[in-house]
Image (cartoon, rainbow, N blue to C red; front, side, top):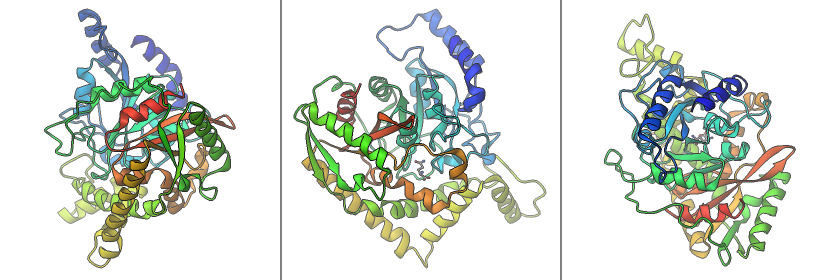
Amino acid sequence: VESIFDFIEKTEPTVGAFISTNKEAALAEAKLVDERGVDADNLLDGIPVAVKDNIVTKEGKTTAASKMLEDFTSVYDATVVEKVKKAGMIIVGKANLDEFAMGGTTETSKLQQTVNPWNSKKVPGGSSGGSAAAVAAGMVPASLGTDTGGSIRQPAAYTNLVGLKPTYGTISRYGVIAFASSLDQVGPLTRTVKDNATLLNAVSGKDDKDNTSADLTIDFTEKIGQKIQGLKIGVPKEFFDENLVEVHVLQTVHQAVEQLKKLGAEVIEVSLPHLKYGVPAYYAIATAEASSNLQRFDGIRYGYSAENAKSLEDLYVKTRSEGFGSEVKRRIVLGGISLSVEHYEELYGKATKVRTIIRNEFEVALKEVDVLVGPSTTTVAPNIENKEGQEPVEAYTDDVLTVGVNLAGIPSLNIPVGFHENMPVGMQIIGDYFEEATLYQVGYAFE
Ligand code: GLN
């Protein structure tokens, strides 16, 4: 832990992955591990980890990268935080993100800019950009992110990491600052498949404080190392559309598919014709849920409170106008429209129907094959300036390859499969509910 902090002190000024670090607390924890002796049977004991700053910790602040929570301290630990601590892991800091996890570049963070460790002119992706950059730069071996519409897989793809969006319900959301509750999942980002599965084992499982959490008795590492010979790999043609995905990204992912064939897997083309409606459905649903979840930031209960308010109404308006950034406000307004009496049927109502269709299409495809594979992103990591000036709808469209999985609730694992112009390319491996062990089995074939 000491050497990690030496490295963080050298590296962090150029990367900007952490909103806060906690050297004293981490060293004290490490000392306790030393005194009691490391448990040799527990691979995670004494291992440093970073936690995305929308997951609450008693230690230090939890900001969600927002002015609204810039000075917020939680009185309790999220269940995932309790679990990493129970596994003996040492939390070294809280990682940067897009404000309230809304974005795909970490540029909407109100506190700092994180850069991609592979090229400091490029974004690290988002919204878990800090969690990805911290691991990719070698500052920690593992981190936790959250994925509502791609926010673990996309930054993992942009920074050459293994990143898992687990099946909805695998990890407790208690203590995770809610963005869109029916889509949000916590997940691990690591450099290797084994590390990822080991961390998932530690943080998953039933939690009485989250009724959507699942009772699991799976060892997620159990298939790692098993041959993939005979496995059926589905290639959805909509993921390999040249009008959608940059040609070099496609070529790299095609090569990875060829490699799976060489290892004896059977590759089958499948179709998910409604996938393209995932983006509008996702944004109608995610913004609706966000507009509801973010009501609690009213200047009274949590965090920032505007000064000189003349009435209660004035306090709400001033606090929310000053405390939220423009992307968050845009989503609250969009969500309000999605749920409004005038537009409910054509927006939120229709989106939930599209969601069911997309879920069914995935379910049908995953009856025919063991896993589906495709690119995680439409391009490699873009330049930092480019995305800033990007139209919101353009940025939303970029999520087309990731949001379908969240709408369906199924798991997806990003693994590194190559480079284009020195920037990493990722492939996602998508499976049926609670089939993470099979995703790791396929992912491990590339290590
Ligand atoms: N980029 C998507 C969005 O902006 C996904 C965000 C996420 O998964 N947290 O909503």
